[in-house]
Structures are given as structure tokens and as C-alpha cells.
Image 1 (tube, rainbow, N blue to C red):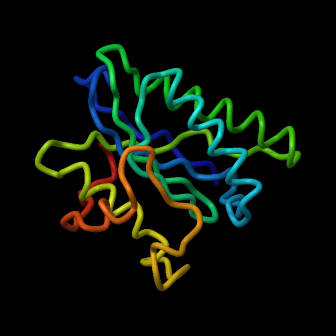
Image 2 (image 1 turned 90 degrees about the vertical axis):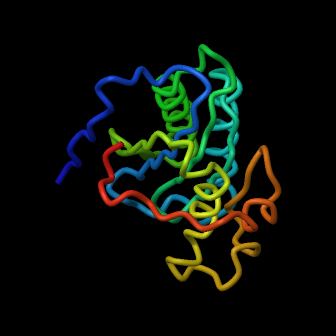
Image 3 (image 1 turned 30 degrees about the vertical axis):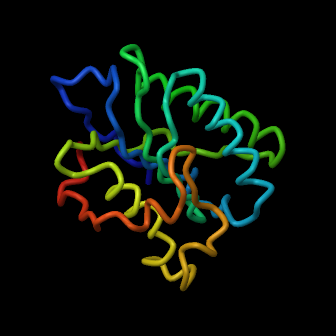
Length: 169
């Protein structure tokens, strides 16, 4: 069964200095992110896309079959849709070249982070995913989390966040 396309906000253009919580699932939920070589290839290309599209990688967590990102536009022309497209194209191309299979499902999920939610609180939620999934007992020891903006300790010191009930934006 193929996932249906999640809806985007109708009156929001996804341009500018806004934070976004993104989730990309692997094709057929295969467990791509279980070894460092794979994560390194994909994270290099995600970072490359972030630089090209002027986004900061506030938090990331590579789970076995999906990726959580918290990105923040750093320029009035930062385009979240362009970042999503470029990051999935670059990482998918390089992954397929090395591992011989498709990486991503066609669609992903995005949530525009509201001011009252707090970027660091959302970052903490992302970094604690391996703990909730019982992949580790100590988030600091999980090898596939991080940030290009904050230390893991700064993020984990933030107040907890609860995701909205409705996964649509």
C-alpha cells in the first residue's frame, strides 16, 4: 500500500525564516539507517541540501526506517519545499548508487513549528525518539542524532514538547 500525499497548509508559502519538523520514511519502510556508512552518505547529502537552500539543521535523528529533521530557514528566500526536494533527491541518488535500491517514500510529513511550541522543545522530542522506540537507554549514546546549531546537552535541557494530535501541518 502506498502512502497518500499529506496535505500542506493552504495559506502558507513555506518561504522564509521558519522552523519545520520533517519526517521522511524509507521506501517500503526498509531499515536503511542501521549502520554508520549509510547514515554518513545520507547525512552528507542532507547537509549539502541545507547549505544550498539556506537551512540550519537544528536537530536530526536517523531511526532505522525513517528520518526526523528539525530545520530552520536562515534567509527570506529559504524554501522548505525546495529543501525537501533537494535533500531527498541528493540523498536518494547517492544511496541508490551505493546500495542499489530506492531510499525514500514519495511523500513525507512536515509540521510548521509555531512560536509557542519552542524550537528547542521540538528538537528534544526529535532526539528522544530512539529512547521512546527502545533503541537505547541513553539518548547521548545513540549514534545517529545531532544538530549543526546546538549541542545535544543544550537540546536535552529544553522543556518537553508534545506533538499535535493531527499529523497534518
